[in-house]
Amino acid sequence: MAEPGRGGRPIEETGVEIPLFPLRTVLYPGGPLPLRIFETRYVDMVGRCLKQDLGFGVVAQLESQGEDRLALHQVGTLARIVDWYQFDDGLLGITAVGETRFLLTGTHRQDDGLNLGHVEFLEPEAPLPMPSRFSALLTLLENVMAELEPQYRFIEKNFEDAVWVSYRLAEVLPLSLEQKQHCLELSDPVRRLETLVPLVESLRQ
Image: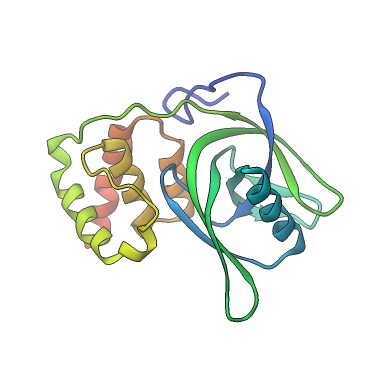
């Protein structure tokens, strides 16, 4: 079980099984995820998700330990496909949006190589008015988002909500994978913003 403030509380203890897409990146609730799909197992997964309106789990990969074993972080995010297209080279492209965070409690691999995860969905963070003391972070995000408009065309913006702002900042800032994962695991938007303040200051030096 995740510790308080790190990962949050499961909505229910029974859990469900979802397809997993391990990546060397972190997806946040409400954030975009463009992907090029070329492996057969993921092409098939995308087809099932589109036909049955299913989500898939995005979880940050720690390291590869051979074809039969993956080391994954415990907290990931359910992704929902909102657009698909074909690139000039014939590869399938999709855009997904992060929805609910989950706690990964177990994994197994299908015969086609697709990883499935047993997950417990975590309670969404309640909206919180953006504290005025983080006004500098808010201004930074507004400036950055203006330059990334095409990437966020499917995303409903909410600069008044500390949850949304803290996730978007962690998303767009050039942080390490471990720093981004730490921000995902925090269930308090104020703590997430407090974590980002020194990181932003270090980037400016």
